[in-house]
Image (cartoon, rainbow, N blue to C red; front, side, top):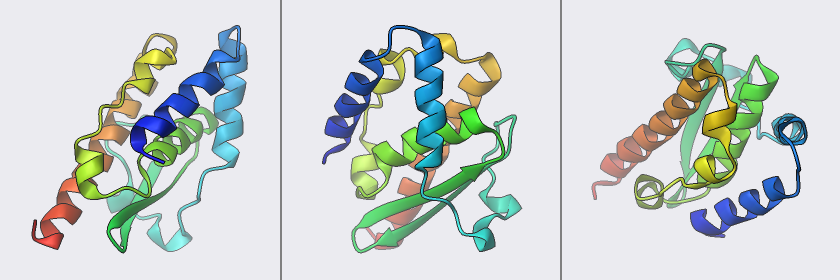
Length: 141
């Protein structure tokens, strides 16, 4: 699936909920599906700066695709990073760098997250794009 297709799938999932309690519960459920980071990658250099809670993010290439794993010590934040991993993992660095992550606005995350969680989400996106840049330069493109 393309990044756009995954975003559309997420938007339709969130459309099923009438209120934000349901959406928060869905985010918590998504946290349980997150491909967890191996303990050996839970290092301070893998912590996302700008997140109030601890969020570890690891990236590695699998062929031409960048694959992310992550974890957080806070359940909502873990759900948010699970969303981001679902959207961006398994795509090329170019696809990640050129992605327009419109689903964040469309499902209402910006207006329903606290300012600190919203900043954390922006930091997650920025870090995933930085990994895209780093791996793209390693490929010599």
